[in-house]
Length: 149
Image (tube, rainbow, N blue to C red):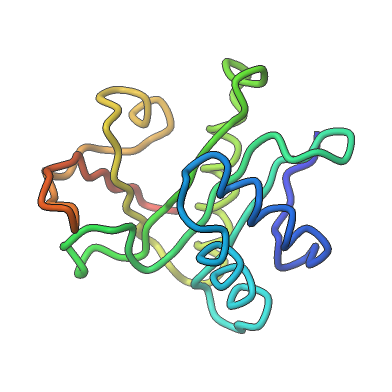
């Protein structure tokens, strides 16, 4: 299994966009647009990551400015973290989170945020509950924070 920065593997761009779409039901075009920005940008945001085994994407995550919440001051955000069910329980989510944190630290970004409905999962990987944040839909969701280094 390999953990890859999609900016270094542009051949994964379309398949990654399709993969994320099937996991989160956000239009594939949204992922394609963000991943294209990742491939063109010289800065930190957006970034996308994939875990690949035997040529297939088995996990992934992104870092974007805002993950559909109204706390625009809490940026950038980890988004779309997903590990295929048959690969869960092996620490892959933690490895993807660490890859994103290390990558962002390399860009000089020292604080990351994420929103989630999970109540204890992210604490295992050094994330701390920060507050309840209002999603763009008006619902409240848990907001976590982590220092990258």
